Image 1 (cartoon, rainbow, N blue to C red):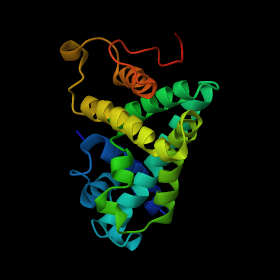
Image 2 (cartoon, rainbow, N blue to C red):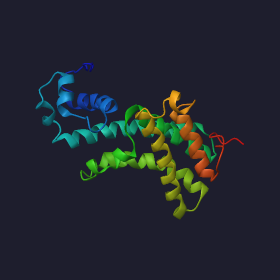
Image 3 (cartoon, rainbow, N blue to C red):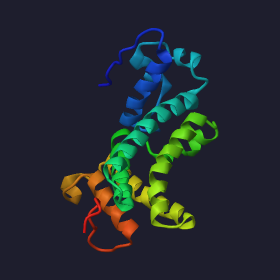
Length: 206
C-alpha cells in the first residue's frame, strides 16, 4: 500500500520533488505519475501544474535531487578510497550500482532522451558531477583520449550490476554471495586493470 506523504501548505513544489524521489525508486520511470504524487500529497491532480509546466519538468527536478544524492555518495566513496585511482574508480562504481539498485536513478536517466530536450541546467550540472568522479581517476591512469572510453566501461559495468540488481536478477539465491555493489567494485577493478579471470581486490590490494 502506498504511504501517504506529509505535506505542509506553502511548499507543494518541494513536497512533490521529495515524494517524487521515493515514487521513482518504487515504480521506476515508466510508473512515474504526477497524478499518483498528487494523491499521495492529498492535493488535486491539477495542483502540481501550478509549479511545474508538465510531467517532464517535475521529473527533471526529481531526478536532479536524486542524482545529487548519487553524486554525494560516489564522491564520499571515492574520498575514502585514498590515492589509488583504481580503488577510487572501483568504490565509486560500487556506490553507483548500489544507488541505482535502490533508487533507480543513474546516468541513463540523467542524460536520457526523456529529459535531454529540456536543457535543464541544474540536471546537466549534477550529471557532470557524477562524470567527474569517474573521469578524474581515469585521467590519472591514462591519457585524455583513452580516459573517456575507460570511464564509459566503468559506467557500463556499474550500471549493469545496479540495473540487474534492481530487477531482482542478482538475488543471492540465484547467483551467489555478495551484494551488487561489492560485485560491481570487483568487476570495475578488473576492467580497469585489464585483468581476466579472478577479480583483483577492489580496494587496490594485491
